[in-house]
Image (cartoon, rainbow, N blue to C red):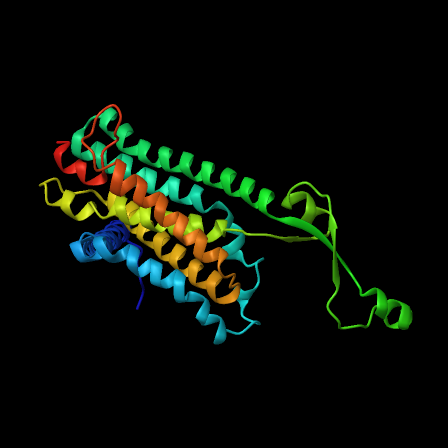
Amino acid sequence: MHWKYCPEQTKMDHCGLKEILYKIHNSANKLLHSALVLFTDLTAGILGHLLFRRHFHCLLSVLVLFGPVLSLWVSKYSIFGNKNHYLYRVFLHSCWGWTCILCGSFVFLLSYCISNSLVHSVRHLSRLAVTGTLWTLFRRLLSFLVDASGSCFEPLKSTTEVCRNPGELLDSDTSPLLLLREEKGKAACLKAGLQWQGCEASDEILILSLCCLILVEEIAVFGPCMALGKPPGAPLRILFMLCVLLMSLWIFLILCLLAHFPQFPSQLVGGALGYLGWKGLYKSWYVLKPGWCCLGRPRALHSDN
C-alpha cells in the first residue's frame, strides 16, 4: 500500500489543530477568569464584612501581645530564625515601598474606574502619601528618643578576676563590667562594636502593623464598590488579590519576628505606635467631611460616581 502526499489534507489538518488549540486556550482563559472572579468576590466579601473591619485591629493587637509566646515552641535552627533570610532581605526592609506600589496602584485604579476623575483618584491616593510622611516622622522621633534616653557601653572583665588569674581572661564566663563611653547616638555606638542600652521601639513591628491596618482599610471597599453596578476588570481583580497576599505576608513576617526575635517590650511599643498612627488618620482625621483640609476615608469612593 502506497501513501500519497496531499497538500490540501495537510492544510486541513493544520487548520483543525489550530482550531483545537484555540478552543483549549479560550477554555483555559474562561476557567482562570472564573476562578479569579470567585476568589476575589469571596475575599472581598470577607474583608468588607462589618465584623472583620471593626475587629481586625483587635486581632492584630492580640497577635503582637501574645506572639512572643511562640518562641517557646519554635526551633532556633529554623530558616526563619536567620535575619539574612530571603523574605527579610527583600520584603521586610522595604515594607513601605511594597505597600505603596501595590496598594497605591489598586486605590488609584479603583477610584478612577468609579469616578473617571483624575482629581478624585489623586485625592484618594494622597492618603498613602500622608501616611508615608507620618511614618518618616515616627522614625525620626523614635531615633531621637533612643539617642536621648540610651547610653553606649564597652564590655570589660572584672578587675579582681583579671588580677587573680590573667591567663583565664578569655575563657571566663562571668558577666562583664560595662564602661560608659561618649559615643554620640546608637548608630555610631554599634558601628564602633560597642553595646547600646536604652528604651527602644521596634521599627519593624511598627511599620508592619501600620501597613496591615492600612491595607485592610483601603482594600475593604472593593466589595461595596463592585455593588455599584460597574463590574471590575481582570487587572483590578489581580491587584486586589496581590494586596491581599501582601497583607498575609506582613502578618506572617510579624509572627516570624515575634517568635524568632522576641524583644519585649520594644515590639509591643512598636505595635502600639502603629495602631495609634492608624487610629489618628483613618478613625479621626479621614472620617471628617472631605474638603481641602480632609482627604476623606476610603468608603467615600461610594459617592464619587
